[in-house]
Length: 462
Image (cartoon, rainbow, N blue to C red):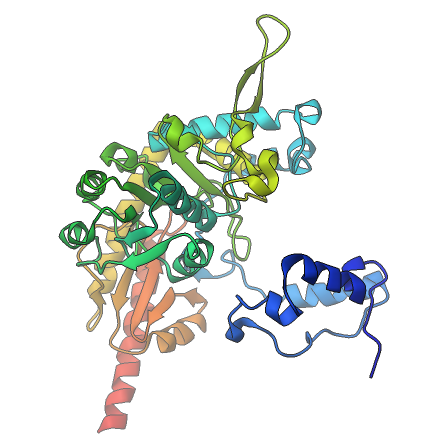
C-alpha cells in the first residue's frame, strides 16, 4: 500500500491533521463529511490534470491555448442572457475600478482606506434611490446569495419556514437558493399563469406558517410582474413578508417593487457597469426600508457617515457592525464571506454617469427593443411567443423544430440565438448592445433555418 501524499505547502493534507479535523466535526471519514453533496456531483476519479509544466513560459503558452478556445460576445452576435448580460460598460467605469486604491483594497479598516468606504457609501445611496429603498448593503457574492439571504431573513423575522415561490425562477438560481436555505426554509412553487404570478393561487396557499412570498421580476423568462401590490397585501395579511428578486436595470422607467409593498428587495448588479467576462462579474444587493427589525437581520456590511474627533469633520464606517458575522463569528445569525466590494464601486460609477435621465432612457430602450424582437420572431411561420406578459430584455419563443438544432445551425453563422430551455423553447435576450439590424439578422436566419429543418423533417416522415 502506497504512503498517503502529504503536500509540502498544504498542512491539512497530513493524515493526522485530517483525522483531527474530522474528529472536530464528528465525521468518521471524508466521505461522511461530504455526505450532503449529491452523488452525481462528486468526481469518483482523480482530476485529469496534465503533467507539471516546470517553466513559466510553458505554462503561459498552455493557458493562452486554453483561453484561445473562447469566443466573446465582441466576436459573435449574441442573444444570450439567463443571468449574465451584455450591456454597454462606459470606459470610465473600468478606469476607476482599476485604480490601485480600489483594485487592491479587498478588505481592511478605515486606517488603511483610501476612499473605498466613501465610494461604497455612494454606491449604496445611488442604489437606494434607484430602488426607492432606504438601506442597501455592500454587495455580497452574487444575486443568488442575496436572494437566499432575503429569504432566510424572512424566516428569522417571522419564526416560520414556508416560502411560496410565486414567479418563474431561473433554474440555476432556484437550485442555488434551495441549496442555501434548505435547512431553514421550505420552498413551495405556485404555478404561474401566462408568464406571471397567479395572485389568487398564492393567496389560497397563504397561512400563518408562511414566512414569505418570493417574487422574481423580471422573471426567468423576462416577464415583468404587474400584481406585486396584491401579493404584498395578501402576504402582509397573514404576517408574512414579500421578498422580491430583481434586476435593477429597468427601474429608470419601471416602478420599483418597494412602492408596491415589497419588504425585502434583492438582486444582482452585473447589469450596472460590469462586463460578462466569460460568466460575469456578479455582486448581490439586499435592500430594505428604514426599519430596525429588517436592518438588524441583514448579515452583510453597511457603510454610513461617521463623526470624527475633529468638530465639523466626518468619515465613513460600518453601521451596526455588531450584527454581522465579522463581529459575532460563529454566533452570527448568518455567515457572510466574500464582499464583491469592487463591483459595488463599478456599479456606483455607472449609476452616477447614467443619472435618472440616463436610466430612464435605457429602460425605455430595453422595453422597445424587447417588443420589437418579440414581434420580429413571432412573425416567422411556426414560431410563437411563450406568453402574453410584458417583457423586459428577455422572452421565450416556441419553435417548430428542436431548439438545440437551431442553436447549432445559427452558431455556424456566428450567431448565438439564445439559450435552450426546453426541447423546442428558446430564451432570447436583447440589450442596449443589440441593434435593430441585429434583431433583423436573427429573425432572417431563424426563419431560414426553421424552414429548412422543417422541410427535412417532412421529407423524413413522408
